[in-house]
Length: 442
Image (cartoon, rainbow, N blue to C red; front, side, top):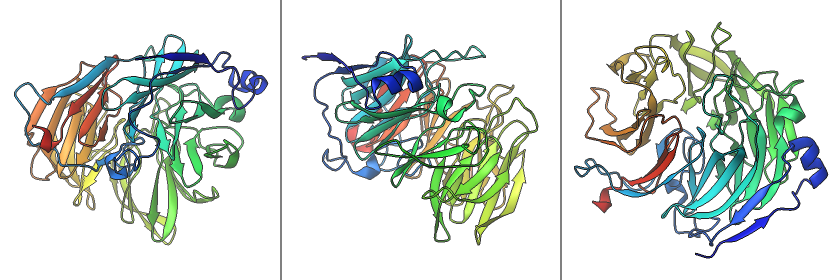
């Protein structure tokens, strides 16, 4: 393979503005071979529903499209298509049009890397300096998962630098240092909101001062479109939904749930939901089912189901002994929630549970199961434990009955995986692996 290297001498923001606002200094771009895929899913022959272009997948709720998955694996586990070493970070992979975006830290650089999703080979890289230091000695890489939309890549680094790159080439199109521009705080564990592209805007819980809690940027130019709320940033990423004929952007900020008009930033409702402990975080993404919104947090906060009625909220149920999500977002199927209850860092750890959405009744609980993530593919739960074990189980309310399990990674799996076209892309603290889960391949 012929590799070409180049240095970007000039950022779209201009070198003076880049130095003053972003503090990035040298910005590097390495261009490899032409990616196997193209900038658009249709041109690559990969339907949109089979991609995983953002945090929590195509519909931002942990539900995968694409072919059915196998219900059993070979004795040695699902076939490993490729694997490679990666740098620091809790950022999950995003996959669209046959290309995978990896956001990680290599040395003192936050690095955005485009890979051929079929082979794991690098197409291009873009990197910029970072000085992020974790106050608690945890991983010092980026936390937020990239978003891919309309031929562009959006990333939000641990120090609050938002970038927009061209998906085909890796060329930087615009960037904003949100901490500097909006006087946003560092938070306990750095900045972790995964960008949400809605219409012509990129939405983020920035947690800035003077009404810049939630901010929208023009997705093509980076121009500020609107800002709203005084809410500090949480570790939850937003979602969007149409409820009762109205479009909502839903943010679980550090203060609680906020529902906004994503076009203009008008706040339609707010619902306080946070622990009285200062050392607490909201981390799970709100989940919308019809006119119901499920929100959840640990730290003696708990879960709640809220109904949106005539633009206002009413509580259906709530409690701290049902499904208190620490950092992973629960998923929904046929009347039931599946997810993790309790804190991962407090013995005996998390419980994996099934809960009836409309009543809050716990239907089954695997106590002490440990932390991880859960996705839904068809009628199957795809469970990846933070110890690196992958499990498949039917999404049923009667019991947790795994049909397949395999160790695919080592310990330290905190990043959300991506499930695209029947393949799972998952990363630990030092490895990214692609495994085949599609039923038609073995």
